[in-house]
Image 1 (cartoon, one colour):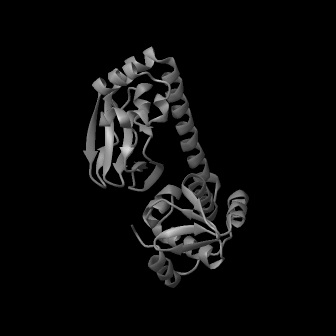
Image 2: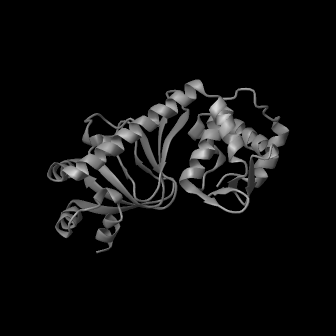
Image 3: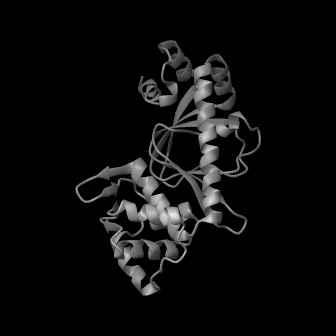
Length: 250
């Protein structure tokens, strides 16, 4: 019953009947993962699809020279590994938990059978695949055509829209991300991200307290993001300690 309750809270299953959920119950199983545990790696077979029930999962790639680029950070209620449905190739990304995580797992073959029987569900999954691909393409385009300040400003705005909680002074980003995780999301070194956060704070665009970022001036961040500015000054390394004390790694 607990598993069915979780499944009913996934938006992609809206409109499904009790009989449909009974089928889902039979073809899925629940699995716990510890924090920082790999769910699958690059080159692993794509024979399983995952539903995220609790915790957060990071989807990323590692380049041949060892650099990491985070493509997505998933929250409860999201599906991943769905590319296995349309592509028999091995996984080209890595999925790793950021917290203690509970997943609902199903074999690709069983999910494909379900999709053939439920056209509405197939349409929702197809839309998810399209949105994910477009998101990844946009990220890669940003790496090529945007400066680091522009990428960071754009990321903060996006996090504010997805995870922001507004108060009288601004928008608190209600998401736990370390400086390294932010750096991986915008394709820079941690030191560069730390320096940029410190500069945004000095300029009054953001504040950082208790390991939380608060957007104080969303308009200025949008101005930097839209202009793709390349000349925003970056403080020297002796300024980075200030941001580390206020934000740090989580």
